[in-house]
Image 1 (cartoon, rainbow, N blue to C red):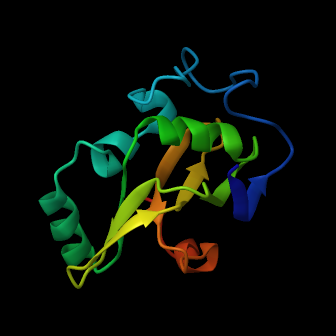
Image 2: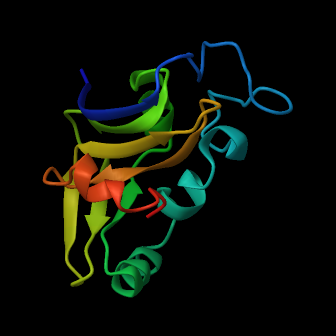
Length: 147
């Protein structure tokens, strides 16, 4: 079973996300649809399993930061359900392979089991991608979470 390894809750005054009353604008997101841009923002288009390796390699080199790729789109739905129902930043260990990480030096770490997830104030995930085990929230705090 997956576990939360690190968390930084931004607002614990109200619960948000799937299973909670929708407080965002417009209609509620399709939480069970991994292609829902409203629920999962750019996760599929930037970190999805169908994205070609050369895109990750180029982005890692140009940003000088690791780039994570999910192996299965259903896993970011699982991530949304697992993290606390509060806006914040989280690192989850799925305890099974969920992705790979492309490094700026051109190397690739396969079969990573951890992911970074950032929940927005309305409960949606505005960022989420696989990370290596050594990655910490303090290392991610300086970034906008949209790697």
